[in-house]
Image (cartoon, rainbow, N blue to C red; front, side):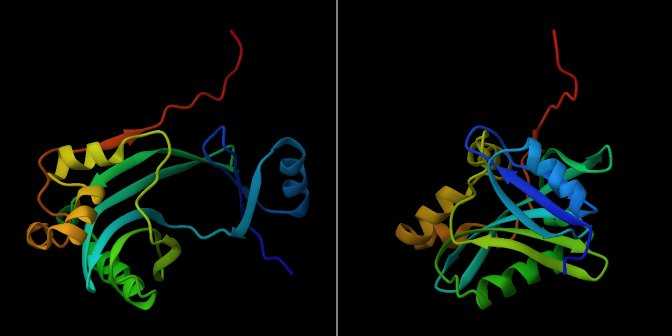
Length: 196
């Protein structure tokens, strides 16, 4: 059987994903009665969420961005994402753990060339892979590449092009994001009120 709590995530073309924490079958049924779209149900795991963007060439991996995903709970069941914050590996307590885990995942998934985007949770027992795709970061509604470029001096798209077409330029990209030119974030504003 299912073990609660579960995370129920809805996605639709019109809006960003909505995530709920459900502690019973009744709560899932209530949400299903009001939400529309595709649904994913998975085990809820507490931890800090990081999005990792990488580009690889012949098995040599470059982590080009680490984004901390700031989330909180609203009314103990809706997960609210407040924003993505670009991080330097130098300012993170568990940077080496995350970077080594990300590299191990890339190697085990045999993503040896091209871009990858993964979501990692840091839990009380260590890193946990939520998902990975061999594609560019496709975060909806923002231009992360321009922000990454402004803060780091490069971005995942340009690093991918260099990996394929300009190996010399690819080699100049730092293997992990340490030197930041400025601080960067994508911030989301929410209102739980409606009306005029």
